[in-house]
Amino acid sequence: MLRLLRAEDLELLSRKLSVRAAELSAWRDAFLAAGEASLKTRPADQGVRACFGAFAAGGAGGLELRHDHGSQFVADDYQRELASLGIASSPAFLGSGS
Image 1 (cartoon, rainbow, N blue to C red):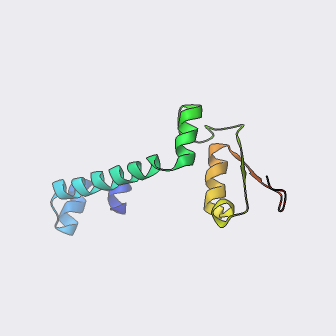
Image 2: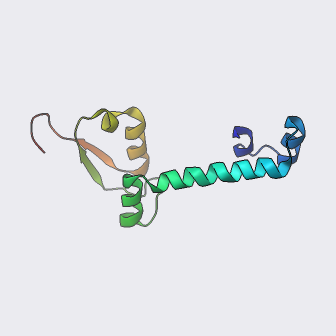
Image 3: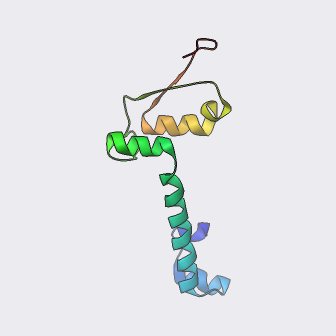
C-alpha cells in the first residue's frame, strides 16, 4: 500500500507483486476512503473545519486550546498536530480547576 501512496507506477507494481492493477487500485481507494472517514470523526478536526472553513496547515491560527495535563493532550504527536494547524496549546495550571 505504501508503495502506491508514494506514487509508484501501478502497472509496474502490479507485475512485481503478481496482483491485478484493478485490485491494487481498489485496495488503495479503500485505504484512502477509510482514512478520510477516520479524520471526519475527530472532534478537533471537525471544529477547525466548522470554524475556519478548512482543515489545513496553519488554518486555525490564533486559536488557543485550553486543556488538562492528560497524556492524550501532552503527547508529542498531538502537540505537533496542534502546532501544524496554528493552534496554541494552553495547558491548565495544576490544581487551578480551569
